[in-house]
Image (cartoon, rainbow, N blue to C red; front, side, top):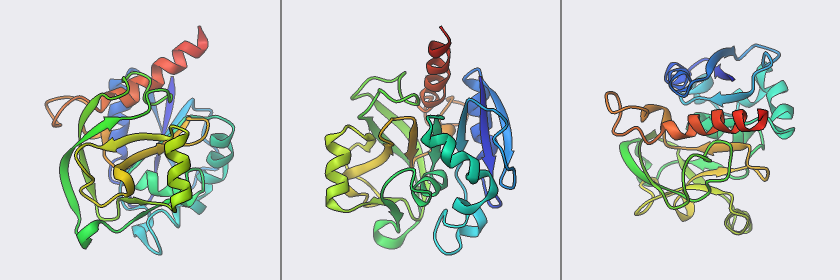
Length: 225
C-alpha cells in the first residue's frame, strides 16, 4: 500500500507521519504542496504543523494549494484521507469535514498527553480499534477546539461521525469533547491529537496511535481479498 504524506510550507510532522506509515507496513509517498496530482496513492495523510504560517486562518491558504485541487475530489470519491491537527483544520477549510477549529479555551497553546475514547471503530482509519477503547496520545495546538453549530453537532452525534472524544473533558474547550470526526462515508477522518507521535514506547507516551495507520493498511488489504 502506498500512502501519500503531504508537505506544505510550515509542516512540522510530515516526517513523523511518514515514519508511522512505515511502521504500519506501508510505503510513504512524499507529496509537495505544489504537486498537481497525488501520484496514484491509496490513501493520504495531511500532517500537523503551521501550513503557510497559519496566516488568515489555520489551513485557509493550504486549502487552495495545487495538491488539494486533486485531493478534494479524490476524497469525495472515496480516497481515505487522515488529517492530523493542522491537517484537520485543512479538511474543515476544504469542506471535506464540517465545523471549524478555534482558539483553545484560555487562549493558551496546549502540549500534553491526552486520553481519548474511540467512538467510531468503523472507519478505514479506526477499524483496528474497538468502540470504547481508550488511547493515550499527545496533543499540541493553539487552535484546536472543535466548534460547530448545534444542528451539525447533533447530526454528527446521531450519525456516529464522532470518531474520538477526549476522555474526562476537553482540555481545549472542544464542543462536546470532540477530538475527531469523519465524513459521511467514513473515509475522511480529522483529529486534533497526534497519533503519529504515539507509535512506540521509545518516542511516545504509548503505541496507541499506531492503530490509525495499521487500520487503513488492513482495510486496503481487505479490499484486495
